[in-house]
Length: 432
Image 1 (cartoon, rainbow, N blue to C red):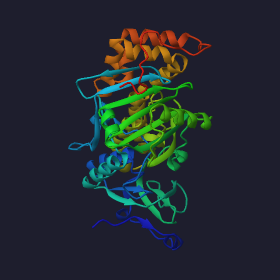
Image 2 (cartoon, one colour):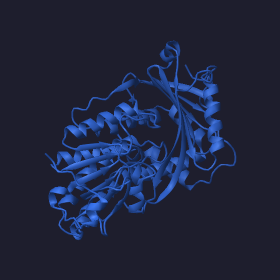
Image 3 (cartoon, rainbow, N blue to C red):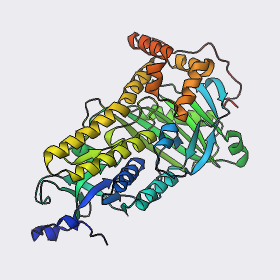
Image 4 (tube, helix red, strand yellow):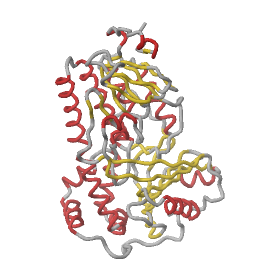
């Protein structure tokens, strides 16, 4: 039976000497997609892994729950997605106007309930050998001081005063990460997402089955969505932080426009999404961060699940190596290798996402016209959602897309709102 690495304040006062049997190889803080993926990867690598989560599972998370191709491809072998719906059609609108629905014979992406999805990921980590502890809040990590017995050890200090000792820490504790603060994560984009889970009658649910709505919103860079999940519609909006009242008005207007204002939400919630700056660190000593804790998400769509799964897997793999490092130099080398892997993959995608967000903020009508009226743009959208390519891949290989981005990069923002002229307004605001 494994020995738990729990050291109390009284033990420290007695100058308790900690043996290697009392030290975990890897401690992962946060049991969302990033943390569960990290715990799974480190456990598969043969390390003694402890996964800590402050909430009891399953728990609700503000999230649309869209599972695109890159998310699916990053899941553990044998993982069965708890899909609530399979999307074959997308309705696009520009602040409620110029509505058009595009359909595909093949599934574009799936929709999950995050509480179910996250809990299943945690069970895969547990099955791989990770120990899972819920209801445990982490106050901070320490790499020096009285709580740390040697230079190979990190102390994870818990909110109840206890301490867990480990050779490596993976911070996956969300966008308000305590571990991210320790590492010194820097941000250059913060957005506010508001969401409502709205139970609807079967007649309404059937009308939305297999179809999502994406509405390019009234504020620069904003958009709204409707994701069907059985008898519930997940309805949300996101915009740059700074004018929460305007974002709330957008959500209220959006819900009313869709004819859903008469239904009482089961849950109404808000959440801040944060994107890292290019020079933001991803590690400090034997501590690394991933997912939202590292500010890793796609800046334009703010899609975070695939970034969490992919960065979490890499974090778990490199944390396993950091745990084996016998000195600070070797630990630093492994942490830098992790950072390089992130920047070479997800970092490239984020850079293109920033360019897309800037272009979208300037010319939302142009984007709407392209995706609803031009077959190559729609094909690029479907290829990205299915995982055949990425946003960065499209920008790199598609000559037209590259030229458009280059041209928009050189332009000044327009003085007035843009409106497309190649699609037709439909009478139904939901685009049925």
